[in-house]
Image 1 (tube, helix red, strand yellow):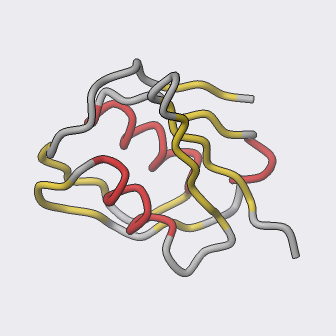
Image 2: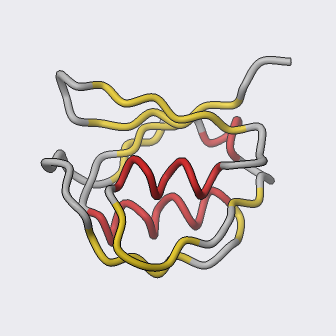
Length: 89
């Protein structure tokens, strides 16, 4: 399980995350948004995420990144962290 970033209140942030391998793009997303993302390396490995560029609420941007992939996003209000996981077939 990987945890990236730190907890932050949801607000629009400027993003420029290119499409690419989820392991790399999730790290870059966490760096740019300063939000915490939790995921299992094996479940996101090999998944290609979409690019996201512009000003977005982090949750909206993260959902754009995983749209059309086998990945899903869940937000934990208590901790302010996002969980990214592979959808079960």
